[in-house]
Structures are given as C-alpha cells and as structure tokens.
View 1 (tube, one colour):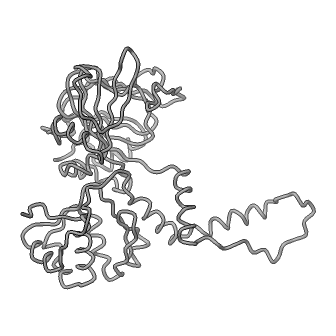
View 2: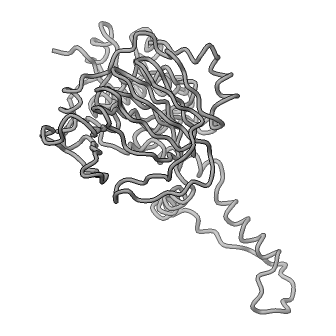
Length: 381
C-alpha cells in the first residue's frame, strides 16, 4: 500500500497542511481494498474486549449505544453507523495502512477506527480535538467541512457532542481510495450515500490536565518530588499575607527543577506506551525458550502485536532504556541499537537479529516478550 498526497512530499504536507488546514486527497490510495468486510467488523463488535458503538437516528432524535452487539436487523437499511475503535489492535492488515503515515511518529498515534454505514448514516456534525486522515473504503460518503471559529456545541445525546450548523469550506464526495485530512478544531459532517466503509487514522496528544494528573500519581508511586524550597537569604517581610515576585519565582522553580529530563522521559515513556484499549494478549506465558526463538526466526519473522506501543527517547536511550506497554525496560547502553530495532520496526527477521543472537540479555528479553504475546510468529502450527 502506497500513499500519494496529491503529489506532495510528506515534508510539504507537514509544512503546508499539518494542524493548519484541511485537505482532500484524491486517490491517495490506488485500488484501495477494505481491511475487513462488514460481516467481519460486525463480528468484532460482538466481542467484549473490542470497543464499539453504533449511532443512529430514531424519530428524528440521535441515539448512541455501546457494544458488544449481537443484532442489527431492527435498525433497518438507512440512517445508522457502526464504529469499531483500535482496529489496529485486532486486524493485522491495519498495520499496512499505518505504515503509510509513519512520517508522523507513532507516539502521536491514537488508533485506527473503522466505520460501516448505510445510506443516511453518520454521527452528526461535530468537532474533533485531534488530527485525522479519513480514508474512504468501499462505497461513497459526502463530507462537509467548516472553518475554525467559535462554533457552539451541544449534546445531541449524552454520548454525542454536536456542533451548530456551519458554512462549508469543503463539500465533497469521497470515493474509494480518497482521503480527507482534518486538523483539530474544524467542524465536519459525513453522510453516507450508499453502504460504505471508512478507515480513520487518528493522531492526538493528551491534555495538560490529564498529563499533570498522571504525573502526580507517578510522583506518589515512585516517592519522587519530595524536595522543598530553600531560602537561607530571605529578606525581611513587610506584609505577612503577601507572596511576592521572588517567592512566586521560587515556587515556579521548585516545579521546574522537579521536571528534569530523566523524570519527564520516564513518566512520559510509561504514560505514552499504555494502550487505551485492550490488547490481544495470552492469559499465560506461551513457554518459548531462547533456543526456540533461534530456531523459528530462521524461517519466519517475528511480528509485533497490533496496538502494542513501544518507544525510546533520544536522552534515555543513552542509558539503554526503552518503554513498552507502560513499563520501563533497561537493556544497557551497549544494546541501544537493538532498542531502536524493536521500536522502529513492526517485523524483526533473522537478518535483523544476526548480531544479537549470541547476546543473552537481548535474547532473554525478546523471549520474555514473545511469551507475553508482545511479538509473535504468524505461521506456527
């Protein structure tokens, strides 16, 4: 699968459009094929572990329900949509779609969402707070996009935040292989013209509020941030109720001193690699030994589990640290290249592991990850 951004290079796209303005990308994917069928999608939405919802209109009122679902017949043949989140956690083919957008780092990735809709189906006019590439699969869907502005939002349903009517700056019909890029803050509304599927690749960051809340938990759990202000040269106070400019600066500096690169990278690494949705992990260790990995890797590559998040920082990799599924792992600075290998690649083949096969630290860790289901061999009998 190859992406063509209207002839733009990824760098040109980032410079001209990323978080700036919407873009219709005609035939971004040539001969695009749905990553799964509607029936397969409905099967996923039957599963307890899979996050799904359906949105529809009934007697002119918007309705939203959360899965799992086991029936759709009562919804009829128009005005409803089925949505499954984190498709990349469950369908390996979604990885091929994600690779096309790897000019944006994976730590910014939210997930791949899939929607199936019948004529008239949609989720209503709304505003997203994240970047999204809406890739049209089978069928046709009309999209209207408005400009940024002080749009009034309201709850059309407790689970649906809609926005007031807007004047479109884009009014377009997407065909299979077309893509609509939307930065945060632009109101939009998609209505299906015929039974269709679309695949949305979303990118977001956590809010400052969420990050600070999680950071406070991290400081408490790790018993960090206990230092207090020292002010041995304090001048005489003339106003006992005053926090003067110097004291405010001391308070601010106390917080800044706590947030050094080591703390921020460790906290952020753990936070950013936590999956927001369930991963398809085994309930117990799979029982592989290092010798098993040596033997099998000669015939087929290891594949990283869909949805598994692992990353490294330019600062922390100098100490041999990486982060995976919310955990920090130390492999030693001598194994920094291996860290880059597993974090940057979805598949690891025998040729990639040549220099590591006799490294007990690396192979023991890799075997532990295979036993945990983080990496797997596709074609084991």
